[in-house]
Image (cartoon, rainbow, N blue to C red; front, side, top):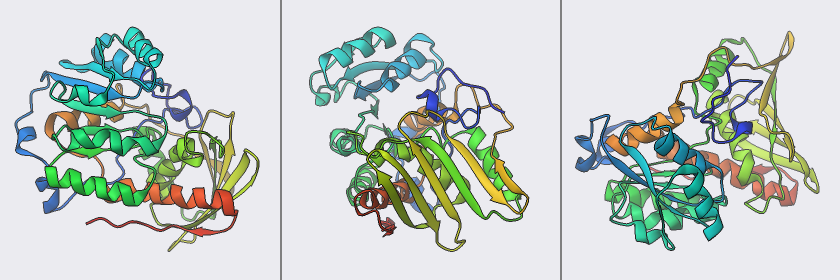
Length: 341
């Protein structure tokens, strides 16, 4: 069973039955196109002590404070510092500056252009992510976008195609899905002879002002897709006010998954049913310290190596869109995957 890591971005997303959940590599970018995505400017950045100035857009989340603590106070990555922050309000920005020792605040994110070497977009509602990042993508600033990557997969495809055109490294992931702990659970699942159904408990409020199911269900969905694959064919949400659960049906395997949402419960727990009964999935390993979430982010900032494929990034958004439609229809909704070359 894993232990809690003090660098987790949310306490509820770093636990799966007491195990640490950080970020898991869902799908490494492969093929000849991967090389084309890496601008020559990143190829020689091999020095571990290389100085990188990070700017953050968004300060309402506690994540921004944690980034400041990790990079500026604890100095877990030599030479990497958060230098600038833009907040949704001045109070949010000043709080992040104080607690994360971030030296500079900007009133317009574009003021950071020419002053930073890497960008983190950390706003709560996914609809703001891509417009905020676009000017930086066009200036070849490597960018990490907090989960969920975007609010509409088609817009995400357009954005990623622009990133490809400019050779700018981009990634996005849920820290629930990106950890040694989750990969260990995946190994356990792969060893089961047959799984009839899966039940997942976790925090989600379908009426959240930050995008409903997009705001928290992304952790459950992306972790599910890491462990069981990305072939979710259709979804259905049943609800009464903010009380809800979701049913997801896989395509080829026919695997049946139930997500039990809670506005209050701040842990994610996975159970599988086999011929011998129900079993809770628990990690047998300790997570990395610092978590691979941050290590891979920094690696991308330094070298341009992207830890996830574009297709995998968009697939989770497509599932969340289907869930959002079903939140209102309460009927089965097919997942309309957006393909990207």
